Image (cartoon, rainbow, N blue to C red):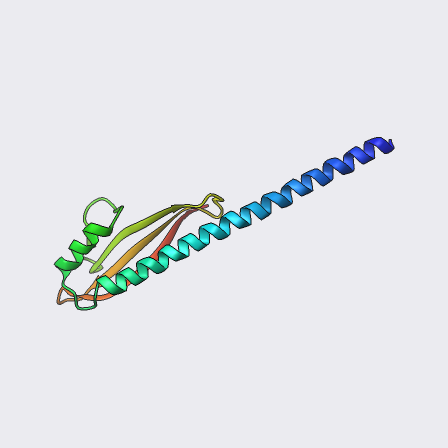
Length: 129
């Protein structure tokens, strides 16, 4: 009976040790993913601020987006009802996958009634549970 209890304790300790190791690994992967994601978010914010100026023309903005966007919904990048360009510029897969398995960085550029840029920003979205 004592031998069975010792084996049970060793088995429990192994499971706890494995689970703790899995959490440390998951935290490390998650931290690396977050660092990479935040770095790319900062890169696109800086690029957008530097390359798309408030007051820039709609055709010039469209041309810039056509060079940058890696994914778009069916159709045009421009939504006339919202007077806004929208396009995904970076995609990421989170190896942990919780709560979101995939993340997108996109740019939103608003256009005024004079067909010139009035605002721009980087947005994030995820495919989540």
